[in-house]
Image (cartoon, rainbow, N blue to C red; front, top):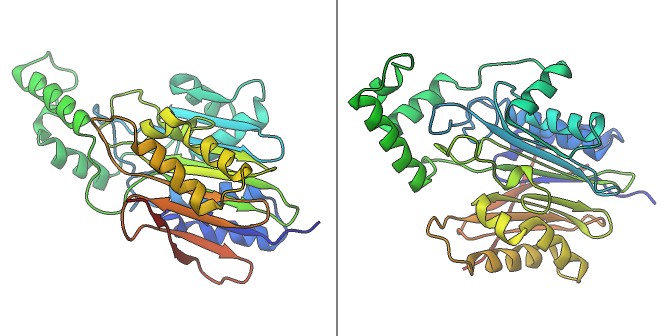
Length: 316
């Protein structure tokens, strides 16, 4: 049975959705559409929460997480704490397809694998992202002496970095992980997630975006889901899997997302911050929820010439 292709994405995914829909419109596969859309987002240097230009961790290093999951097989590939490679979504897909005995590679191992696969290295910390980092840190001089002995200034730098890490506050402006979910004409579902994670995070922190069932889950029998925002909460409730389970029980995509967010909100969390979710079903229904008024997601079908912005359900 032929399905009607559709692709949806979180805030700021509109940069990449046209590339994904072009693939779907031509009869291409959902996994190709998701990868193409997210690569466009990863290349958007104005976006400081994904790919090149992502905001760094407390050491001033950009570390990226990404994952991709196929609904018919529930095959999953992911990378975490990846440095120096601008397209983590493509490396996540390579894990899925070229290293099927594993689902997730992190840190140095992920970088070794990326190099073996022939992916090109690149500098991820742009001048603008570095400026945002130094402005927030308030200690520009402290990062200039990496090869000198520890001084009072170095110690103050580390103390400041720890304080920033504890706050875990996003910078002003659009923020958060980017999710892309696609349904192709053959009826296949695929979900992809890419992020640079919380700014100023503890080095090596891996969020929900790289974990199946937390930030990403896709089961062709029921639907796919993805999360953005406070990843630790998505991990604690297995947010994306909870949404898919609710879809299986008959909930609409919007309601399933809202119920998961309400569950996550019920947990104690001294670093509480907003969590958002999106869902897409095998018959093309879609929806999202968020804890902030005015939150939206982007949609394209074969009839769209540009992404359409839809509201998410508010969970108050």
